Length: 228
Image (cartoon, rainbow, N blue to C red; front, side):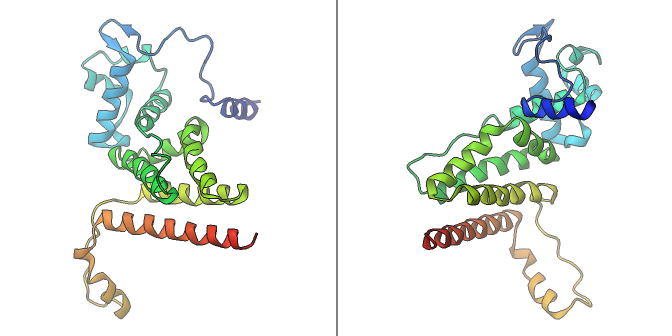
């Protein structure tokens, strides 16, 4: 029975267990001197400054300077808080100019999502869940660009999955610059490559990955069009 309810909640686009009809709380409303917007903004500050693992209801109440129970008027638990935080973190992602080349549109959109992941350490998993369950607008934005480029329905799905894997797969990897290892005893090919670590920065690796991804998508599109 529990699995059935969870599946239905996901299909309807809301977190399982959350009351979407009987909750008297309204976005932007206040309770005393506290508003839902203030709660979300405070939670985002905590995640931005200290990482997701430091966010708790108690830590949030300290950030807000209120009693430990005050935030519970708006959020029933940490899971619901994370739901609101992820939605807020992705709210600024916008559709690129439709007159641009499809690869440039895709690059801009990927960059926006990556900036969200970089701004809020540890939030990648929550953002991943949000995109699949609630942030379908972002999935649609990516797929619209792919359809406009001329990808078939099947290849749009495959291309989206590839982009999704790159963005969220790297979210668990440190974005800091690579550390130069002790060169002693390294295999010759490893020593040759890692001798350039002081020249390669986190953003260089990200940009290389995006360029490789886009180049691969171009090749796949050309192959698809040639088979018609």
